Length: 123
Image 1 (cartoon, helix red, strand yellow):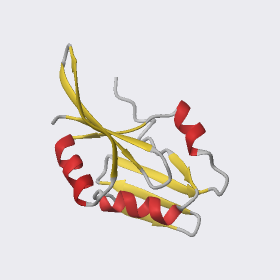
Image 2 (tube, rainbow, N blue to C red; image 1 turned 45 degrees about the horizontal axis):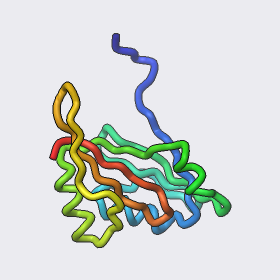
Image 3 (tube, one colour; image 1 turned 90 degrees about the vertical axis):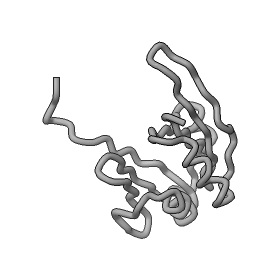
């Protein structure tokens, strides 16, 4: 059943250093879609959009205990290559999981503010 009521999920991540977090996503091919002093919106095409909000006292380690930030991709290897080229911190190298429907690959990259960003998809 297709719903016309909901059109997109747009989460907002709170970060201490807004500029470095924005630069991280821009280096991975995302674009800035909204730019304000304490809030920036990041997007990729028509399918991904999320916000980054400045919050000086955010405890990312605590947030990350309860929240997984995962982005689906067509090629995990391409993302891994981009991360290595840009010296981004890869905290989990390429890992493959086998399910009934096939294989899924993941990597985990640490954002400048400490979020573990999981990239998942085909190799």
